[in-house]
Image (cartoon, rainbow, N blue to C red; front, side):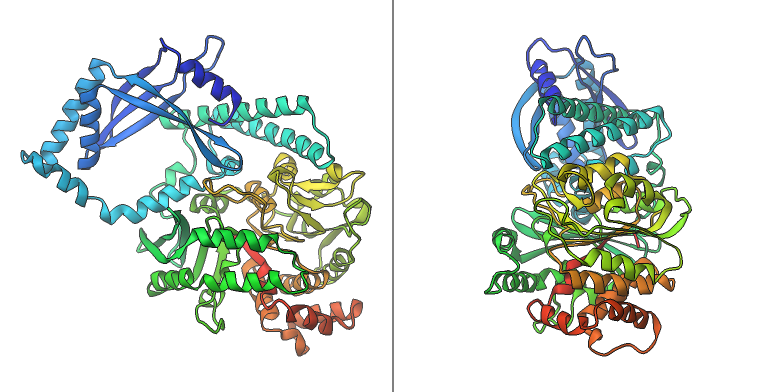
Length: 613
């Protein structure tokens, strides 16, 4: 349950006598029971049906089905999402099964058990204990795909040709617009009961249309476009997709790779890596100020990254025998707040995960990666759009020079560039221009917020609420089917202030750009300085300007920063053009950058890339 309407319906459902339905049908090698939820008298929609499938090729599921049919009832457990992704139990409901359902289920279960174990019924539990070990890794991976699913990605993942899909998209966009208005009010210190009521109704409307869409595809009335490729590997033979799992406080890795056209799964437990103490340490690190005179923030960061040597080595040992060139990481809390690409592979920290692969990228699920890869793309009108705002126009948004400097540097490194700066760089204007570009670069103040829909980038406006390009605003009006790369070169655009540990997902503004069709997003995990942002942007766009793809440009830029290559001026190539552009504006930038990185050797790791590259 996610809404008050859900709660009201369930409470009525829990009051006897409740009318519901449970049907049964053959399904592949098993039996499927359909639970038909009750409907309220004023509800015009058809009843929602939920499937429960029992495979009769597994002794455990056949035994469960026999038990269900023998006792003749089940209990439906009710949980509710509260806070920032935590689950709270509400109660359970007793459900009786009809004699017809019990008889059919019992007959099918007994036949399956006779086929699987013969007449030696005492071996059933032994068979259950031993079967399925070879599929544990796949089960863990697919469980992560579900647990880390993000509702704002469903428009890509659930894409369908049916009318139910269009209703779902309309409701999703409406919810995003209501959330955007609510976020603007939150940022301006205003609260409106009217908006709050509208928000609850919009959440309920979107959830209802999503349930109907899923029910329609489940009954075969509409076919999700991705489901037709469910048997095909969503990870190519050069890629390993790694879900990091919090398994009762211990880290597990669920790895998917492809060989000879077939998917293979591995499950690795990192026994020596308890996540509880790490979560406490990360919370303490985040409470420190980066400019603390005793370098507490920087020391904490180095210690936290050094702690990740165990998981990094486990990843290497699992995937390197298979000649994998690309690593896709989907972290779990609190690891999503750390630069796992900088995790060391040796005690001297000379080698990291970034060095071990041709590409290291982040993504929430393999399903979303497949959806982005298969989404319909459109041609861009302009190569690069730069949106830059230096602040200074609102209380609390200090004036910085980096964004306007970035805009000038980038404009000189591409042949086709549109630039929006200062008064022109409003959220509405930016969202109107972004669908025309292949590369979108935003340089501004980045602000996180306890309300993740209010987090984003500070552009131009009369108040913080009207000036912020928020996650909810991007979801409401964004359309990025022509955008291959979004660069959010501002503070903390790839992190969040959430505290939830149960539901894992992307919670920062980068996620909204992916959900609206952008192929990849470069963002930051912590505060960056003006100079670091300018140098990163200049080198990145110098590579992009000569035709490098997103990840090649990102990787070459990270190596430039990490190896301090600015200390020896480049004599030719794209980097020379970048350095010359910076020289023209900031003649002493090399010495200033030396001073900044002396206190934070991991400054380069703040930049990460997420999505499809």
